[in-house]
Image (cartoon, rainbow, N blue to C red; front, side, top):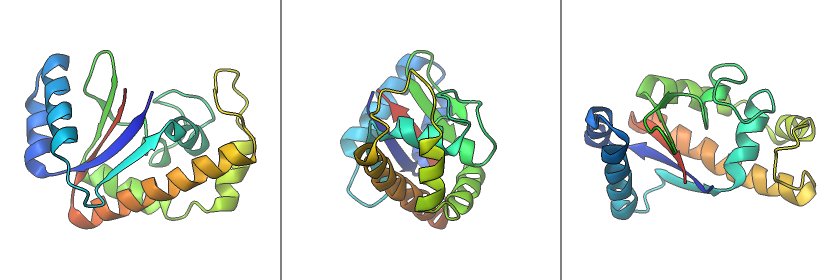
Length: 159
């Protein structure tokens, strides 16, 4: 599953929250993806989102693992879809996440990465896998900082 973070505009946020069902959410996410301009408010994390989430939580791939606000950087938040990962964070929660992510440095993320002990993790857990995770984490951290500055909610999708 490939991950994408979007710092959505208020009108997109209102539409997603009013969608009502998974089919309507699918249509809106597709429209958002197709119309997105390269403005620094979207980050593709490919498969690194899995490792990022594990590093920021308790090492497992579950939405309720770890402590807020780091736990909400990827899978924490309000689920908007029944089958796929579509997670929504309010503007206030996105700000909380942005502030928390700024304190995570490479050494801390590496310690958490090295502590991943889950046979379901599909990464290699080697230096190259960590570098891939770190590089994507830096982009996610920057997106949250820009989202907080712009007063935008954040949506994470993995399909």
